Length: 478
Ligand code: SF4
Image (cartoon, rainbow, N blue to C red):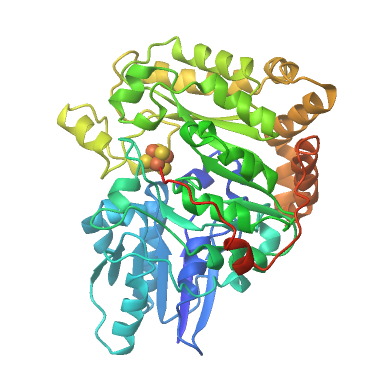
């Protein structure tokens, strides 16, 4: 039996705005995870449309395709292609969960929600000759998960082959986020067992890790245990977390001690009114400046995430946001146009208010305005979004951001990291074309390692995970 896993390219990949490096960062971990459940003796292949040319003339028995909103068109075309060739086609992922009926027209079976419980059930049904047309995840757990089939990942095609996910979902409920729709009908936040997560980390070669969890710090007990267990591993790593988690006493400090060097932080907006409207309660009333300062004191770089177009935003929001981010010395910023994804609370509200402009999913990519904003025109919103990017990553602003740092080495690292990400596009493109992007990993490790060098080093002796876990302090959860 041959199962082929495909991650289709976002439609953006065919546009002139496409930045190849953005999609050459992380391998398709979710599909490699599902491959781990295949019975012994089954053959598996994994192809990522973003970084390789798909082989479409093969004849797998089962094709499993992960569908995002902006890759839906391409995913459906691939699904139709393989059904015509006689394969049993499975579609799953965020977009399938949001719009199951749309996806079902192109699939033999669709999968709603996370796949860890429903994919094994499907495999059993398929072997019994009774596959169902629809599987919906309810009983969720990561306990006893088989090892991810990392052998299927073509590591040399990615800058960050060592990406890892040790939890699913997030404890919060922001209106614009896909999370609640994807995890509807069951637990919306759960983690691996700590020793299984540590074992997965141990299996990864080299030094650098990128945790792709929505909120690695969402369960404080788990996060503390994980960081305790990582003592002595000598890793440098990046992750995502909230302002609330940063400000919690002791948590980020412990993460930094065991190698955290950059954090993706969802600031989203500087407006309290906007935060309340989007039900982003965990950010309400938090001191953003204090959070940035704490990260800097711990030797952790910040990648600030900001969303434009909430109802409290007027045409001045772009300049105000960029100026604040620069004044705080944030190293990198990611900007988004507010996007009402189907299935979210935001989508329902926009639809009820008659503010959705169209349902061309290709443009639901956080770069286009797909709804009628309150405080400006759709054109102003798009123009301001692009201007924010241009401004933040202008050399003038990069130097201004770097000048906030206390000493010359930190200023130089700021310029190397922020400039390297946005200012050397032709270099990235060349490396990707030559399939040499992984060759830049040592440089990334070097910048990340040196960024934390003046801070407390992790000199703890290495102990077996089980032994280390016995010494954990008991802490409350978020
Ligand atoms: S904190 Fe982030 S991951 Fe969690 S619900 Fe909000 S936007 Fe989604």
